[in-house]
Length: 147
Image (tube, rainbow, N blue to C red; front, top):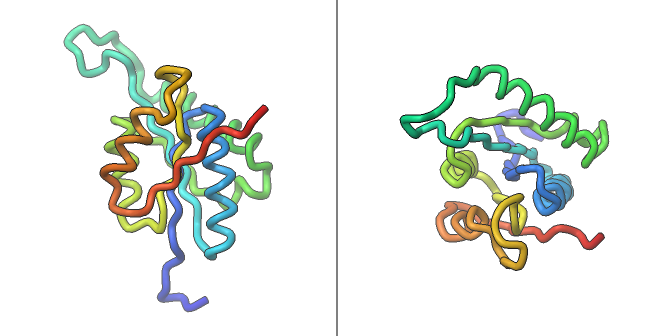
């Protein structure tokens, strides 16, 4: 491959839900087919952080714990060899905003159909629905695999 040519990026949103893990597996397979790289993005936000009554929290400890948990979960989902090929990003902020920024210039943005919250019967979660309307690249929405 030419040194001056960058590889296509596939960005995948991870939130610990079964559908986000299915999205991660889909993204790694797709990146392999197109000779691309995978950027797994997990977004964390402390509840009440922006309100005036937010508790005192050590942001570094929370980020470190979240990074360790993400590393363990991605290794379990993909296995050690595949995990080594994934670029892991843990970002503090609002999930839709962070994922839209991360996906700028990407080949595709891959997300699960539903995250950990919301209504169990909802076809799409609020984040995946928002991304499908506002992303500047193709969005792939992956449902969790049947048990």
